[in-house]
Length: 172
Ligand code: SF4
Ligand code: SF4
Image 1 (spheres, rainbow, N blue to C red):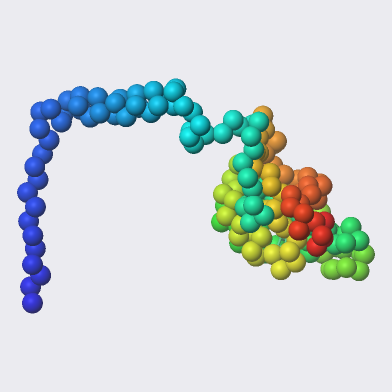
Image 2 (image 1 turned 60 degrees about the vertical axis):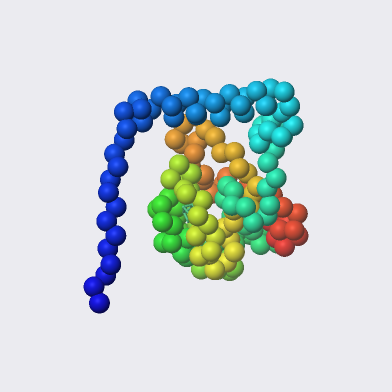
């Protein structure tokens, strides 16, 4: 059975529509209405006085990364490269070294995350078999004055504590 095709005739724009004048006036009307309303009473404004008022961050929210430690303070990461392999932005770079404390065969000698390339997808956290990398620091404001400032090094990652009490009890 042949498909029934409904032909829609293109109407084109009228002269007034081509001027965009009416649409601009309508848009300005909406803007001015909001402006006057908020001038009279700003209690319902959908804005915060940031940074004085911080946003509520839940423990499931993906913030800046950290590397976790065993309760005895040793590094959990075994330099398996799963996070680096799964990172869609290719912003994780790990250099492994032999581990001599008997906890595992390897550990990271260098572990960097370039936050300028990271898309905060959380795949690195999902891929880690050791629960060694997390994004539960609660750090939402990541700033720097140079590209180098935006690259997290192993020391930064290990020194950053978890941002939520329930995780603090599990490990560090
Ligand atoms: S959050 Fe995503 S993009 Fe960022 S380091 Fe992890 S895997 Fe890569
Ligand atoms: S953080 Fe996890 S996935 Fe990444 S290298 Fe270390 S152990 Fe492997």
